[in-house]
Image 1 (cartoon, rainbow, N blue to C red):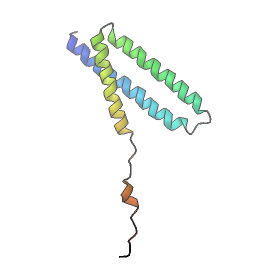
Image 2 (image 1 turned 90 degrees about the horizontal axis):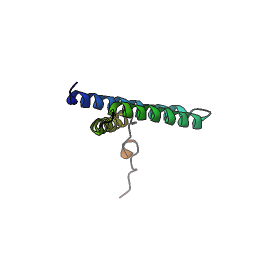
Image 3 (image 1 turned 90 degrees about the vertical axis):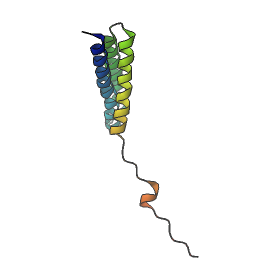
Image 4 (image 1 turned 180 degrees about the vertical axis):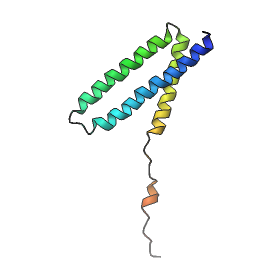
Length: 104
């Protein structure tokens, strides 16, 4: 397999690891706040997500720093994608409230 294909696979894997990590974080926050034991949710999620991400980085790199760098770049891109997709719509401050008219 040539190096360009390996770097492409490293990028795709980095994006998948990032989607899993940051999507899992988003899911944990939504579930954790409504749970009776939020600390267990957050700690368990942190350990699971971090373990999967670090193992993925280790296996993708294969001892080559170039693959690790590309994989980390994909991970960062996934962060941007997930934060954009999970953003709640923010209402404009002036949209719902109107200032009362003043007497002249």
